[in-house]
Length: 273
Image (tube, rainbow, N blue to C red; front, side):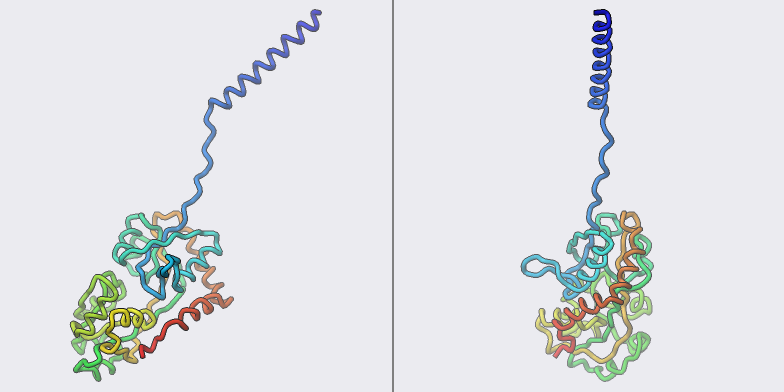
């Protein structure tokens, strides 16, 4: 009987200790699980065939496809938001968005980081008004200095970093419009002498505003603009840019880049006629 009594007392003590441990585990909060990282947010200006949404709201465009494919290969999800170009830059600078796709400039690299190799180079061609009185001189331009020395003015859109660093800085008169399509309306009305743009993106907008008979594409190619993914300095994705760069190089070698671009080149009549 004494042995049984001792056993029961020990069993009660053991149950009490276990109960106390359970209560402690319930009362002490467990550390939270790490929050799942939000998708990389890319802000972009609607500009087909680079990036746009179709009538069903689906993202399209070869910049969109290239960047999404490369980021997907390194396990990064994306979310795309359309804004006017100036707002895109402000959003990245302020941390509201993670990234944008553009040409790196000193001003942009003050608040963002990028990778070494451009994923696309965009040829810049001179356009002018079809009945411009100095059209022969415009077609004879061989470089930016000729634009300045000839006293020609340039029409562009607000926030065009390439224009700021290559045209305005040389003292060339520049007229700006808030939106891309407005550039072609101004040129058709001869409110400036030339526009410097990529034909693949220019002609859809020229046709959209109905000035294809008033604007001509010259054979003058000034240079090419290197396009990169720029990620804000404070974005958690800024450290993934080296992986992104390696991936786009692989995509160039394995034919993915060419396949994506060719799909859109076939959709665009770059000649303008």
